[in-house]
Structures are given as structure tokens and as C-alpha cells.
Length: 155
Ligand SMILES: Cc1cc2nc3c(=O)[nH]c(=O)nc-3n(C[C@H](O)[C@H](O)[C@H](O)COP(=O)(O)O)c2cc1C
Image 1 (cartoon, rainbow, N blue to C red):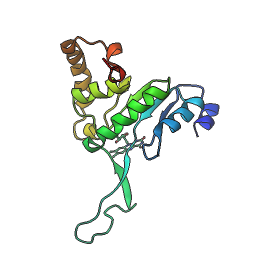
Image 2: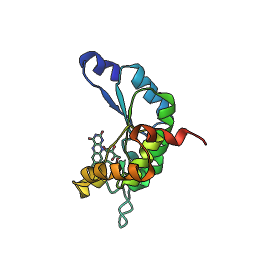
Image 3: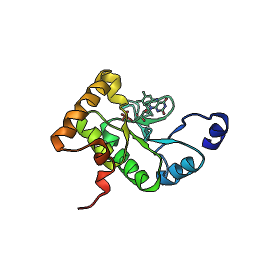
Image 4: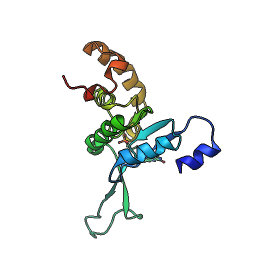
């Protein structure tokens, strides 16, 4: 898929990765090799909700994408593992709603952090997180460059 898009589009190409695979790093490496300039991780996790009355699938499509705080540890793991395996920048997302969440994704290796579900409830959140990030970095005596990937450094 990425190779076909690369042939058709000479500009910046971001490949958004599904986490619903056995090894997201293999897919990320394939997308990078096919010409993606940036990887975005992760999309939603496939889930199932039942109607408590009928005990049948609640969604018309039977399954649906799970997002929000529940997936944050799963998404952090995906970003952490991708960072070790690819050279292109990573956009991290999955359950971000606080500046602390942004710091965690960046420490795992995200160069950019995105807000999905939380932004639906609070459209101004992304702007406030970006503003709060500077103060959080100052508090910790960190720079953006020093933060990105810092969870990989053992000391
Ligand atoms: C209502 C809704 C619609 C979404 N639509 C798309 C989409 O069209 N394309 C896409 O790549 N991701 C889509 N996503 C996934 C989000 O971009 C994001 O990857 C995911 O929800 C995890 O981040 P979050 O926990 O901050 O929401 C959607 C998520 C939600 C909740």
C-alpha cells in the first residue's frame, strides 16, 4: 500500500499503523522501506461491546475501534518498540489527555504527539498541551531533543 502511494505522491508521506498485528515493528519497517517519511502509531485497537439487555454486539459493524486512556500503555509499547527499529520520525498517539502523557510518548520515542478522542470532548486540549509542554520541560530541565527517546537510555 505504501509503495503504491509513494509512486503516486512525491510529497510527505505519513503511514498510520494499525496496532492489530502481531508485530507492529515489522509493519513499520515495511512502510519505511516502501518510502514512508513518517510513521504514526497507533490507530485504534479492535474491540467488542455487547448490549447488556440483548447480549448481542452493540455496534452494527460488530467490532469497533477502542481508543482513549485504556489503550495508552499499549500505544506506548508500540512507540517504544518502533523507535528501536525505524529511523523515520514517529507520531505517537493513544489515550493522550495530559502533558504527562505527552512526556511519556516523547520519552518512548515520539517526536510529535497527537490527541484523538480527548480532543473530541475538549477541542482546545491540543493547544493547551502544547503550551504546557514548554513549562513541563523547563520544570525538568529537559529539552525536546533530550526528551525524545530518553526512556531507552538506562542509567
Ligand atoms: C471517532 C474516531 C474516529 C477516528 N477516525 C480515524 C480515521 O478516520 N483515520 C485514522 O487513521 N484514525 C482514526 N481514528 C483513530 C485516532 O486517530 C487515534 O489513532 C486513536 O483514536 C488513538 O488515539 P486516542 O486514544 O487519542 O483517540 C479515529 C478515532 C476515533 C475515536
